[in-house]
Image (cartoon, rainbow, N blue to C red; front, side, top):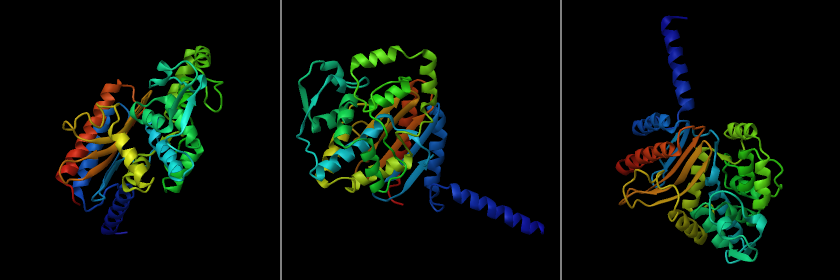
Length: 337
């Protein structure tokens, strides 16, 4: 082969390789610069940073580690809410339906139910439970909402019906936290009283706890790719995930979320509206949602997942905040492709 032929073959190989790994259009160098900036910011996370951004009005999108699974932590409460509202839309459940809390429904983790209620007889509506699940990430409310939604398999099946393949829900929060903590012997349905939790937790050897936490980031259960979570948020915005009234309710609740002010919102201008949900466990720190740009610049689905990080959570949050600000600025000043 001539030197020219060899050179031509090398060029073809390089071009094909670049195209195969490309996540932004070749004719949009500005998006390529944003992608490069997100890659640069990954080092700030202390681990692996997965990002997805979709400008809803123009359809322009950019990703970092688009199809790599990340532990969702409490961001998996968004697909749980979608499945519950799907059942409500179908007339199978009612948000006004009252659910009585028993001792085995009060689980460890974030939230207030297990701290406020320790006597039988307390009942909350499904709407109350869904809002507690999203607004303050209450785990007891989450597991009751998940049960009303039909369970983990029903949530995952709903994602598949929506055409979302890279997102799966497998466990109630009680079992997710138990697996992370190395706890064995929890009831398969996840209903565990505080007393039994303390008993089982006390039996875990520190070495076993450490091994469980070390392997948590590679567990395929309750994970999503950045692309899949972004697709779900886009379908929620477009009214394809649930009906019109349910869409309005879900977005309203997500706009009122009280957790994670230093993540997607951390470096955005004051009073920027963000409909979002956070998640944190071990080396995982997440925030996913929709950023409302000012004026007529539109809206941006923004997903930021951090996993396998050993630096303090505030530093991980700063990485998410920087990524969100880069995305915000880019689409504010480049709203049309």
